[in-house]
Amino acid sequence: MARQAAPLDKLGLYIHIPFCRSKCDYCDFYSLAGAEARMDAYQKALLAHLRETAPLVRDFPVDTVYFGGGTPSFYGEKRLRELLSAIQKAFRLEKNPEITLEANPDSVDLPALRALARTGFNRLSLGMQTLVPRELAAIHRPHTVEQGAAAVMAARQAGIKNLSLDLIYGLPGQTMGTWQYSLEHALALAPEHLSCYGLKVEEGTPLAARVAAGEALPDDDTQAELYLWTVRRLRQAGYEQYEISNFAKPGFQSRHNLRYWELRPYLGFGPGAHSDFGGRRYSWVRNLEGYIHGVLEGGELLDSEDFIPQRERGNEYLMLRLRTARGVREWEYRGEYFMDFSPIEARLREFAAQGWAEPTGDGGWRLTPSGFLVSNQLIGDLLERQERSRLSDLLPLARERFAPRPE
Image (cartoon, rainbow, N blue to C red; front, side, top):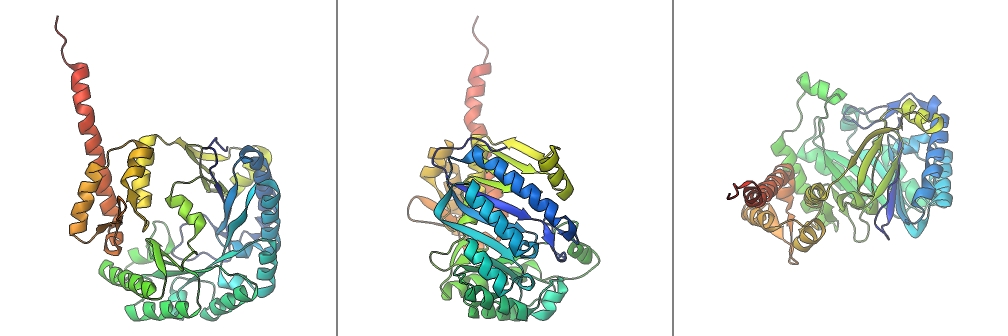
């Protein structure tokens, strides 16, 4: 299902591991608890899919590989090493690719991490979420605070020099004091990267049911205070904010995640995984058995497929790039998408007067931390302005085309 892409594009691979020890109350990703008996069959399907796809993209060097989930570390070190070895043999990897493994602290240890590092895994993303025991219990995380610290130590002993910690603010019962405690203790572990996400109540999750039943969460104003304090504190600690929720020491931005925000090509493998390649976006069936059957027995594997027109890509450019600290550039918008930047810039100037946006000094604009807090509304406004401008440009052409002609 791979498509032709522009020459010299570098490619990212995403490998979805949908298995978990248990489901957290806030999670709406496609993942399964209690399905360990299907791991071997899934491994067979993943290996077959990777080897089938690799010849179709042999001209594209791969510079990032990301194992996400689910809980990839729960899948087992031997299966993970087998997958990466297959990728290294079948695909054309760059000399120094970024190879990331998502992990929970309860499912990694020093021997496993050493073996994974020897195979080529060089970036670890640990889902710590909070360092307050009662907050971990409130969202049914399967690990303890102590296991989180032990996992960091094991990663360092294994030679992992690119470590990211995931934290969530806005958790049930969380206060400014407990969030500050979590973040300070995370900083004491000296990670190269931090992802700090605001809690989202996703429809259909146990957390959504709890909220519907009356459980209170920190309100929007409290979440805003937590976020703005986080931005200030991490800047003080030497972490550059390069995306709404992501902060890194110099040189340690997530290269794989950046490709999503920069509209660069990637291929996904596994149930529910998405790909963006050759001007098309597509996804595989969001069902473990359906995926295994589709790969190994020729069943229906494709869940969705769309060709993305240039104008829609221009909209995506605004939506995704305004999530980043780099922001948008007039010359990129005009040159790549052939769209008028003037109405966008005019509105951004109005946002700047409110403290929501700022010029970058090189013909570009970006949102400020305060703007990031309301980015969905601001970006929606910009897209509406762009659409109105496009329609106003078309109106004179329509009048000319359909004007009565003289006899």
